[in-house]
Length: 463
Length: 96
Image (cartoon, rainbow over all chains, first blue to last red; front, side, top):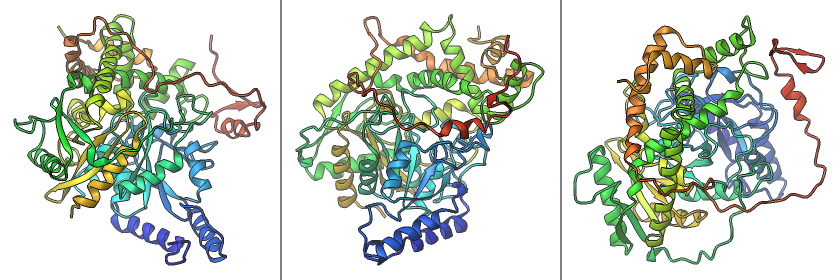
């Protein structure tokens, strides 16, 4: 469209910025002034008849924990309020080559710790479908921005559901790629064995386009891999879709699941079945421990990753009488409550007396979950579940109860623990609140997930 | 018997280099107790013969050629963000 001159990149950008100003969702922490120059550059090249890259002029929003050289990047935290990124994330460099226009950085839970974007030092983001409710989190700003037409696609990060859960709450598509499929170089780390950069988009096709632009091995991220080309000549109509009985029982009642989530998920399965897909009840026994394992491993990694913020090298610095005093003051005033809570919890589960009981045990159960997933993918091509147990909750509703907040990620944690790719696709509404369905695929087989996602969108459109 | 005491919370604060007030210590004690009770479900998991692997995707060791790359210019821009500097070095209080 931009290539043919039907739409100008500048027009697209202006429309997005108008929506941002009109909606007042607090989805962006900062808008970048140089976005106009980049958009105009794409328009100029197109007008000159040059072939422009695929993403030229496309306004992309970037989560506030992904570095862009020369721009501030705060991870939603006071401790990095004035931090200026000294280099660009590998993912950003790839998108720049494709001509993408970064229009601003989006709000998030501090250091990506949260499921509601309420734990941001820059105030909560509102859900565009109901401003009294949360957009989910931690990539809540990115999800709300895509849903409200404030950008065309957005980058997010997903450590335990931080892309898929807000995508579900805001009625957009959220993709967490296979662990290692996309470089994390330049992503502000939260829990390194779980973190993954991914996308929020209007459609599964858009998510796929961005994924293809950012995937691949990067020498700067030793955990990244070049996906092996598999013989993915599959017919999606032959797919067996596994539904773990630990997540959902089509017959019985599902405590913890809201009725609307339960009925829309059931309807989605019935629709798929009618179109010839085989729906199979499978069992992943260790799945019942996923959220507990997640909260131990994540906290442990958080406590070690966030040790770098000391007020000496960069970021907020509070003077103290001694070196130790300075550390204590800086970290108390720089970190929010949830971050402090998780740092302390991490220190506890890693401490000599409790290591075996918590961290050591959690690592072993994580292995069980991985093994169970390997077995499950022997009998199913895709594993399906609701993305979240409820639709978007009210701002403040769970803010005082960490455990209730943690349960918002009950369906999404397992994909991070095992490393498999997962996508959330809109599948219905509870009143005006969107609901999502999650498809998980085997390691590095994102293509299966995209095919099913696209089929789902085309054949079962929601209003 | 509580799983964690206020005294332990304060100790964790010190170990984590986060100053914790009296009021916050008692709030954190309740929160952490709740979280520890929540995760105690793992005690039931049968893990006796489980051996952990560390990676989620099959990795092989990848060597890179011994080639000089571009010299990162970013070091200086990062250094500029240090709260205190002297002669190109980051300044701290006495460590020992």
